[in-house]
Image (cartoon, rainbow, N blue to C red):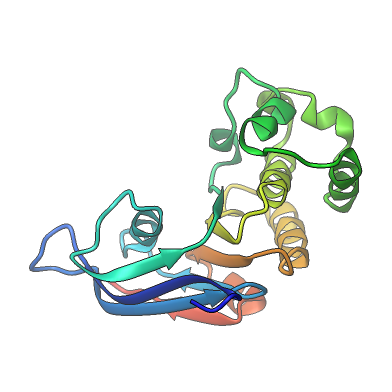
Length: 196
């Protein structure tokens, strides 16, 4: 992989049943500053691809090379443990960051510092999704795996969240799973349609 490449998948084959492959000789590369969208209906194998990238599943054939990963999940409330504050959970996964960096990011994400001192149930879904973006950026991840990151949000909040996410594209590459082809067309450098 070259220095800008954050994910490279070569000749991937995988299926839960070897006679019915979800992926057959599948190839994908993602660079920093790029958004690639995986678009398809439920059950088409979009989330399975993330499981393969994170080594939770093993390919039948092919190779996957990936740099440091961070996630944004579909349900923002499942992204954080209910018993701990947002900042405690960020500090669990982020080794070190400057206070000035944190304040700068909070301002860019339109989050008050008081919000990250609260537990997740005190925040709205949109606020929690922005906290997920905050955590990913502070982790200094190379690739952001975003699994339907706006589907649990109303349309206005979803658009605002995606605009914020795209605004940080200089920091990582984004692999976006979505069933929303319009969203993919709006934000992506490349779209891969997956059909059953």
